[in-house]
Length: 550
Image (tube, rainbow, N blue to C red):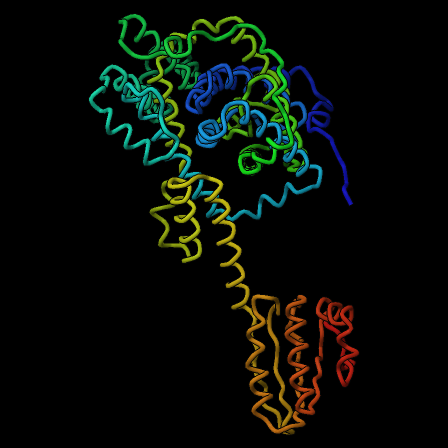
C-alpha cells in the first residue's frame, strides 16, 4: 500500500522560529546566493545552454526544493554532475526534448518519493558512486579545455575522445590571454581559503597590524568564486583582453522574468525519451540524497526525510522546464556553504533564491562582461573538488570486487556515458553480490553410525547457491537403494523458492531410490516457505518436532 505523507521540513523548522534564527538564515542565504551566481551560469554554459537557463533553474528549483524538501539546510539548483548528461541529451535529442525529459524525470522522482523508495538509493554501492563521480569530473574538465585555452571551436562534440581530437586539431588557435585568466582563476580558488587559515602568513601578519584582523575576517567570509569572477572580469575589461565573454557569445541576458511555455508533449516523444528521463531521474535522486546525507553529517540539524526530498526534487524538475530551465538536484558545495554560514532552516534556501532573482533582475548586464575562460577556471576547480582522486591510490587496500566496480564504472562513464556506466555497474554489483552470498552457503556431511546420510546446512539457500545441493544428489545416487537422508537446518537462516526447488529435486531422487528425506530444526523463515509451498506433505515424514530456533 502507498503511504502518502507530504510534509515539507519547512513546517517543522518554523516552530519556535525567532528573529535570531532569521538573522542567521538571512546571512547564510545571501552568502550562498553569491556562491551560486557564477556556478549557475557556468553550469548552464558548459551544458550547452544559455546562462539564464542556469540562473533561473537556481532560482526556481532552489525555491521549490527549500519550500517542499525534506532537509533543513540543503540547497538545490543546477549541478556540475548534470553538465555531461545535459550536453549529451542536447546533442542527441535537442533542447525541446531535453525539457520534456526533465519534466518526465520530475514526475518519476515524485513517484519515487511517493512510493517511499528514497532509502533504496542508499543501496547503490559506494564504489559505483565514486566511479561515476570521478568520471563526470574528468568529463567536466575536458569540456572546459576549449574555453580555458581560448580555442576557436564553433561547437564541441559530446564524446570524450572526439573532444580531445577536436581540441588537438585546433591548438593553433590557442589564446594566451584566455589561458592566463583560466589558470589565474583556478590557482586563485585553490589559494583563497588557505590565505585565511589560522597558520597562514596573512593571518599572522594581520595580528600585528591595527584593523587588519577585522579585515581578514571579512575576507575569509567572501566566497572565492565571487572574488575570482569580479577581479578577473574587471582585469579583462580594463585591459581589453581579446577573449570571448558571455556577451560576445550569447548577446544578452534577459532581465525580466522568464516566460512560461509548455513543451510540445506527445506520448510518442515521451517513449523515445525513456533513457534520458531515467538518466536524469537516477542522477538527480543519487546526487540529492547523497548531498542530504553529507548535510546530516556536517550539521546539527534533524536528519533529512529522503522520500520528502525526492518529492521536492520531482516538483522542481517538473516545473523548471516550463521556464526554459535545466535539471536540478541537491548541490554539495552550496549546501556545505549554507551550513558553514550558519543556516538553521530552509528559510536560508528561500533567501538564496530570492537574492539570486534580485541580482538577475537588477544586475544582469554586468554578467555579459564575464570571460568564458574565468568560468572555465571555476568549473575546472569544481571538477577537481568533485573527484575523489585519492581513492585510486587506495585501491590496493580494497577487495577485487570494489576495484572492479569503481574502475569499471569510471571507465564506462568516460568512454560511453553515465547511463551505461550505472547500468553495467549495478548489474556487475548484483552479480558479485550473488557470488559473495553464494560462497557463504555451505553443506557439511556429518558422520553417522546407522548409515543415514546427514548434512548440516549453513547460511542462505537461494538461487545463487542451489548448485551446492548437487553433491548430496550425487552421494544419494552412489549409495544402495533405501538410504535415508537428514538435512539439519539449524544453521540455515534463509530459503527462497529456488532453494526450495533444489530440495524438491533432491527429494525426487531419494524417492526414486526408495529412500526418505527429513528436514529438521527449521528456523521460522525456511519453515514458512516450506509449509506455504506444501513441501511438508510431500515428505515421507514430517519435520522433526524439535524446538524451532527463534
